[in-house]
Amino acid sequence: MSVKTGTIALVAGLAAFFGVGIGVTAITEHWIDFPLLLGLLAGTLSGLVATIAVTVGLESDVSAGRRRTAGIVTGFGGGFVCGLLIGAAAEPIGTVGSIGVGAGVGLLVAGGYAVSPFGSR
Image (tube, rainbow, N blue to C red; front, side, top):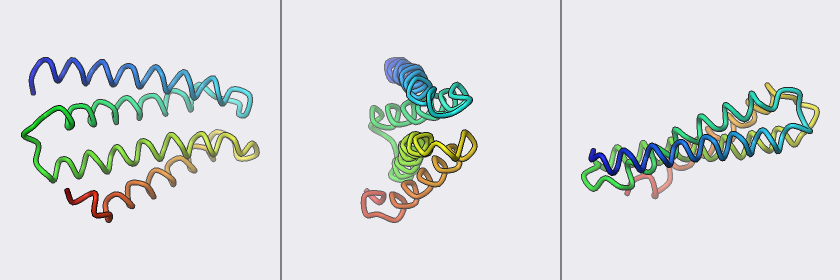
């Protein structure tokens, strides 16, 4: 991996971490008791996913297996953040329930990508 690719991936990961983390915290602060917990979790996962996706996207010599794995991880991360927000909007389930909904949606999206024809490109 070149220095340019590493720098761009790091900047993308940090931007996703701060953007999603602050956004999720701000959105969920009126719905649940511990919004910072969800914000940090969603931000960390989003930063990881963004870093992986940018690295794989910018590298030209990445094998099909690694692209497939990166797609599955990216699908899980996107599904997790969406599920986390959906779970937080359902007021009675709380913080732990929101994390569970996020994990469930993330696993569904990752599994869907893994068995889809898009995952084999």
